[in-house]
Image 1 (spheres, rainbow, N blue to C red):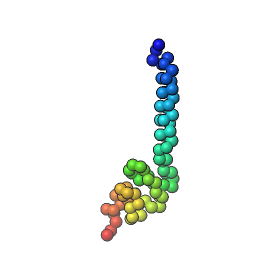
Image 2: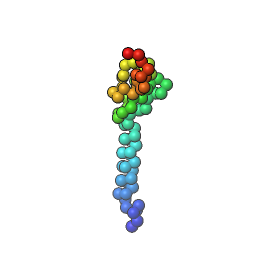
Image 3: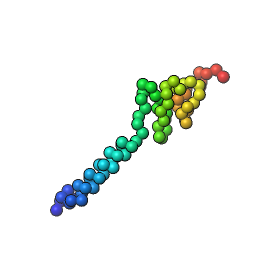
Image 4: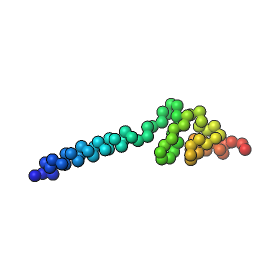
Length: 74
């Protein structure tokens, strides 16, 4: 009896594929790059583009403000 001839091997393969596909479907959707900015981090957070580089950090890590702080006059 070969490795793939065992009846449970195909069942395990199908179950493994289903689990993999379900985990992909459950992951966070990507931000809409036309209207949203993707904050760095895990899990990713999407904010409106209007809130990017507005002088007030909206992402937990401040990535929406980037390097603009050095250009702001305080």
